[in-house]
Image 1 (cartoon, rainbow, N blue to C red):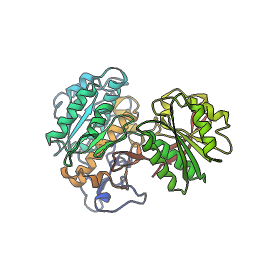
Image 2 (tube, rainbow, N blue to C red):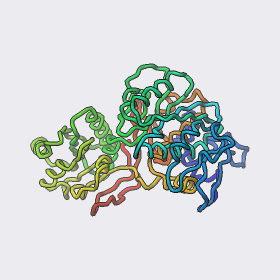
Image 3 (cartoon, rainbow, N blue to C red):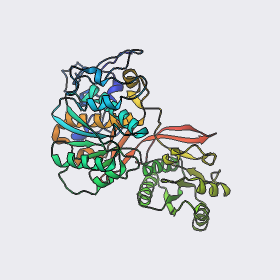
Image 4 (cartoon, helix red, strand yellow):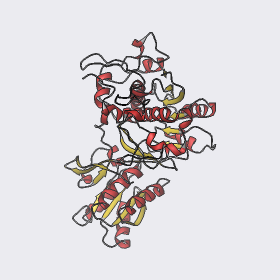
Length: 437
């Protein structure tokens, strides 16, 4: 398969922001991302828009090639950027090519390129995703400088603060270290550039946006999907802690869209699964559905107590979250519904990425690609000064390889995602897309 820059599958993740900036919306409500003119300069009438740069076009079966060989750091030596066969770019190759593109909008990206284990591997996957997005969309729009955080939260925090205070970068993508990202969310300053944080389980903060799917988003989308089928009375069981109020608020808001209500929220600890289920029985009469968030712990104690009460069953639906799936599939999950991103589906970039890098993209690749593509879209539509709260927090949202999403003023994200039911230890697709907004 040869790559056609006018292929609508590529432009489906181009994040056309013209509609957002002029106050228009597409039929879907999100910015129209299928129109190449939304990110490229308008072409003459009757002619397709001309993308910023012609990307390389590897054919299936050929050796993995770099998606961006025109970066400032590796001109004249593209071999430095080559990938390993069947896996992400090596740490040495990534560190040798830390500046991509030559556009007027400067973007800083913080990734754990040299970290050990899965942290480093995921960082290098994000690097490859960023490179593909630059080759596809950003080369003449952005100058993307990538810095290695080494997987060290303290070092990542220092790099991020320096990038924020330098005044050069218009947006920071990353870091992926949770503690560093949480520190950034506490910083004040109305003129600082926005941060598109890549950390798992980050709740978000003003100007520091959570990119990855959160448990609150998963719980809200799952509850909304069941409410859309007619369920009216819901119970939320959530681990006691700092994230409980965010999950409660999101679920309640999602239910209100369908005229459903959150009858009660029951915080619990990992040792009192039986007690929280007993409390539900005394507080709520005949709920239609129970949502169980798990946080860092296992939902098994709560699920065992619910099962003893016949939940899930014909009268009461059980709704889980994406964080259940961080553990091996438990028989207690059987019959539960879960809204989560499909880890095997990275949308329009999958074939392109596989042909270029010789391995299958995962959500790390997709998140990085989408954030670089979003940055390119803003730079194309509004220039270096376009990274404003008004644009990033527009209620219509954006559509990328990870699906439809939007950022909220509190820094959290809301996502549309597939809806599954656990059957025989596997996720069975129920709906291709559901959301809590």
